[in-house]
Image 1 (cartoon, rainbow, N blue to C red):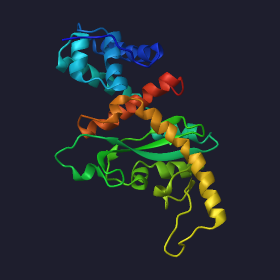
Image 2 (image 1 turned 90 degrees about the horizontal axis):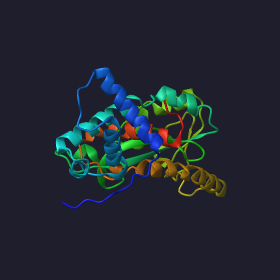
Image 3 (image 1 turned 45 degrees about the vertical axis):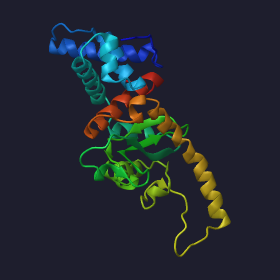
Image 4 (image 1 turned 45 degrees about the horizontal axis):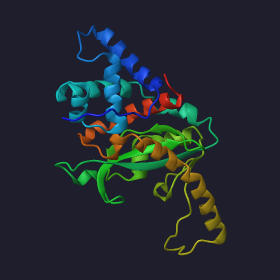
Length: 260
């Protein structure tokens, strides 16, 4: 088998953060000898999350078994996901912003036995629905737990309590037409209806201004998708939430914001 050196587009700060968590976890459990030390395990997990390397490639590159590579990655994901902020903590930051941007994205998955709940009619693809909140500059603040792709964005936001939390925090929030009916502090563009087949000039101008603001939220989704593992999940859909929450923690460490 041929091998070659590769890189991960992350700083050493992120590697050290994850390695420290793994090291602390091992000490707490009084873990016995491991095939890889904490630093190498952290590097293996980051290669999987950031570069999307498969377990087979990781096993060959780190000279461990495939099952060992899988176990190391799952352990790292669990440690990171447990450190993710909850919605209340995120709202403490969001209420201090000028405004927030709410949008949904689909994380593609492989087909599963029970396909119907995961098929998104909007995206014409199987996946998991994740709600993303960004600040005025398009920086990622929070990513929600994942729901099956057939769930509508507004339903997903309500299920996670995001709409109520934004309204209770009185946080001005811009969202697309899919969130119409959210009310509270969520602002959506004007939409043509049966009794209103055409929008007025003022309504069109408001929609254009709204779209310019909301477009910045796409940066947060693009930031999330730079983690190649999210291009297409090839694991059980129920693992999607832990993966997204782990990536959110790593992203904040890399950006040096909200890190604990």
